[in-house]
Length: 145
Length: 148
Image (tube, helix red, strand yellow):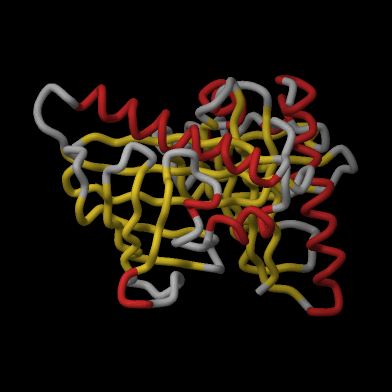
């Protein structure tokens, strides 16, 4: 089982960051690598079980299913159903935690998946840097941090 | 039941911070309110179940028991056994998280307890400000860290 873990500090309150990331269909609005996204079967994007179908800037298509969403604990968990990446059983969680001594929050993005050991390091690096850190960098540009 | 939570960012790698705070008997080395501390019965300070007996700068004596200690999660839990302050059923939890972006540490310190009616707010502020937030600042000073 491969694991990816990336965390950062974003310069605004957790509820404000959550407002920007909780919409499972909103990746194109805040993540620079995502071009367009839709929710399949016209379901609401906060209905657990809904599927987002989105395209990266390079044209790759990915389908992901929402497994868990908590407005209380500020996290969202999802699985990849289809993607061009050579991996299986991919489950990821994006979580926000307030930092009480200032107007800022702690953000964690983690994933676990299975893959051929020969490609594991490349996959882990790509997901950590391009997807997770890339998304956090965009949030830090937007909110400061 | 009162819940208190305080958290901060430290400008140091998570392993370095864990090295300091994982010693259940080490708080007299860094926390400003703790004058002296010892583990009862000669137990090791990382033995789950051990009891630390410590004296505050004001002379009062407290006993706390280590309930969990995890080097994987970099966390520990403890409860108050004896205290002159009216905190009942007090259980506290300290946990560190790595901030991979910048090699820093996110530290969360929280507790739940009961108090006599009417003293909830006052005791919650005392615990949060004088123990937890003061502890964060003390670790910064102890480790020679700049504010983060």
